[in-house]
Image 1 (cartoon, rainbow, N blue to C red):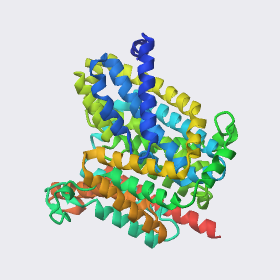
Image 2: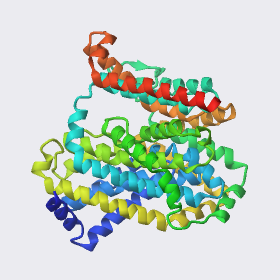
Image 3: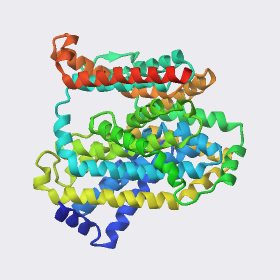
Image 4: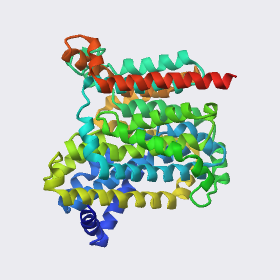
Length: 495
């Protein structure tokens, strides 16, 4: 293993140009991740053809650098603008933005950057040392097991509902309802399309997410000037990494727990970082002695979100490398990058192209360090964005959001959908309906339905067949344990 790692690092450091290319990939990923409406998938789509003429190892290194940079960059706009740059940074808004409004933008950014680094490095370690075992375990996941995972994730909505449980559950059900628009996942029957060809393809996550957060945020800030944002700049300061050793020590349990959640969610195909950050945030909130402090501006929420979403990177790479199964949209494009260069991921990859695999491992380590260096170095520059007057900044954000929505499928329908969900987001804010449950319901609605219907097909309509699947029962057991512990904690707090 050490020899292969040495060979991987030697490929990367053989030429200074290689480091420059990886640096460019990481920087491009950060920029795409930080700009509202533009995502890691868009960055990978743009750079994939450019890597065609590169050496195999360097081409894959650049693509993984974009992946790491893009996932990490989303925290910038989440903290400074309350707009998640990527779906993986939704939960970062919950405490990152309040921290910034307290004049602690430096701390919020510093904590987010460092935890992104730790999450990535921890997932790389898991990918290197235990990927064959984890991949063998995930092979045992069938429709009932995946159904149990989605039910467990949906149950965590209870910690995201805010003050009103009724409004939170209605928000989640609405998210699951709009996820059913379009062709059904099993029999391709048209549902709620009303004869529209555009609705047949259903709604995609980016217009829904960016519309609910970005457009509603732009409208709510449009008449408020930029005095509040200017105060963030005047109060901005950072010392060292942005946090003290005692603060870091108090977050070790949170970091490890969120890292494990991110790796586990990343391994499961079709869920990804857009879910792991919300689940990690929910678990951190329910495990806290002071859950009422979440959402008011504490580092615990930023730690949970940013550690888990970056830990998803290594988790998603495990089934990609060992089974050839992409875990999300970004790894699907990485799979295309592999095949473009004549490499077929799967069980034999480590034997047939071991050098390329360890070059990827080495590149991910180098990219993680470059990501941390670039983001710490550019932190003061990021905050200066807030100096831009609102009448210039807000229209630019709207334009970027519309472009980002359009380039997902190159449909003007998605741009209109973005504006419609912006109006829905404004109405939800006005009536005090929480947005996170809607997002989680929308993300998990399709895998919930798909796995339930597949399980029923395999068992000839017998739902009780689920008791014959120990892994599924284990997740339901965890669900019961979660609600029991939550109830005990609530009773203790009342007393």
